[in-house]
Image (cartoon, rainbow, N blue to C red):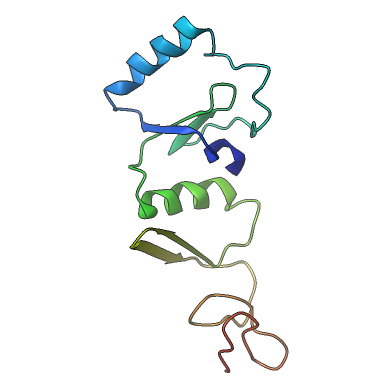
Length: 128
């Protein structure tokens, strides 16, 4: 699913450019994709975003800030992965969100990685 965001055009559904871009896609014959588009993800439609992989277009309800991206990614993957924490950075902007998990795992309070059997974080070295 996340392949849909790789080199895709990501616009809010209320973006005034969206209708014009779709007209250009139609005029150029690429609205339904091209044979050279090999980086297609699985199409999806959620409350927060809809992916059109053939067009390499994602239409969102959220603004594509790091906070908005966290909401969208969590919504897409929450039923597939046991997500404890998501962090996104873009330039100097950063955001993190922690989520309730389905199982009890000791996690590093700094980076969210599961602690090893000795209570040490394998990523940053935090010791419990």
